[in-house]
Length: 269
Image (tube, rainbow, N blue to C red):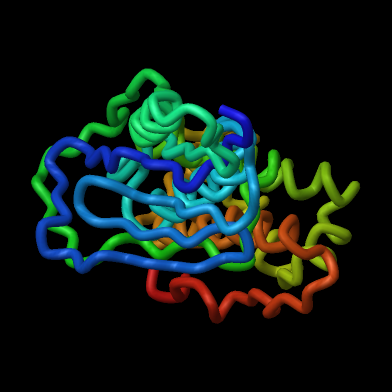
């Protein structure tokens, strides 16, 4: 090809075990770099800027795909839906017109250029079939930053029952604190009330039964987390992951202050 141009990238929609989106309407979205459309089998990213190779185009699209994967896990369940790269549609913007046979061959090749990755399967285990009425939201004002991805990885590990709630939540809390140098600075940077982070720190350091407690209790008596406290921790962690991605997307944006009233009421636990 004289002047290859990536028109679109095609991704397979891989649905997790015991989940379906049969009744979910198609999704579409437009960004500065591509237009995306998604139905039950395929997600198509139509590129709005010039990329000469599939790898160049993927470098842009994959950031969005990773961010959307986090949204899937936060809004629904990790592994419910994945986008797996299938092929690229590449055309020649300056075909050689001196030989008709060459022109036809190049057109044929451009319509069938395939650059594939090996497919990956769902890694979630679901015991009950779930029919989703809609697809998870496309990411807006959210970046799959290293912190957001690490926090989400630990959250996913917890959801897969490979890590305790307290261990996962404490790790997520310390990621925010380390990035900001302190808990107080993390509260300021990410617009989160001190009480929220303080309560999360208390629960993850002092609560839990023998299987999930992070520390042995001072007087030898374990204080198991109550159902409402577990619900509260999960709700907070999902909000913190989202907030980490929002801050990474635009550190100067004015973020809504997160307070205790944004999470389940602990008074009824």
